Amino acid sequence: MYREIPVAPAPAPPGDAAPATADLRRVIQPEPVLLFRYSALTYNSHRIHYDPPYAMDQEFYPAMVVQGPLLATLLLDLLQAALPEARVASYDFRAIRPGFDTTPLPLFGKRKDRTVSLWTADHNDQLGMQATASLA
Image (cartoon, rainbow, N blue to C red; front, side):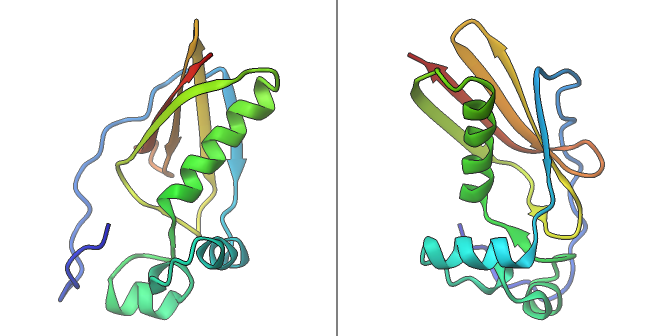
């Protein structure tokens, strides 16, 4: 999803709080090489993912933006690491707030029967990405 080019920084709207309890946890530190390689792998040429001056000076983000599909992939990897024998029947995800390369990005999951809820949170414990995996 591309947004209109901003003419000035806009304050971030208040977000939803991330769930308070989780069964699965991992923290990643997004770094420029990871973002650049993921952009190359997915043919994503948007400069907010690999050009800090552009992301900050032109689009008014506080840092480079972590790709939504990368977050979705990392959440699925969290599930696979915790439940290596599980087979995922379906997977849905929705980006709510962007993640940035300057702060650690916590990944969380909580299993209930054959459903695993997955999410990211930002440094203020606000929900970043929400995902649901249904297990076969």
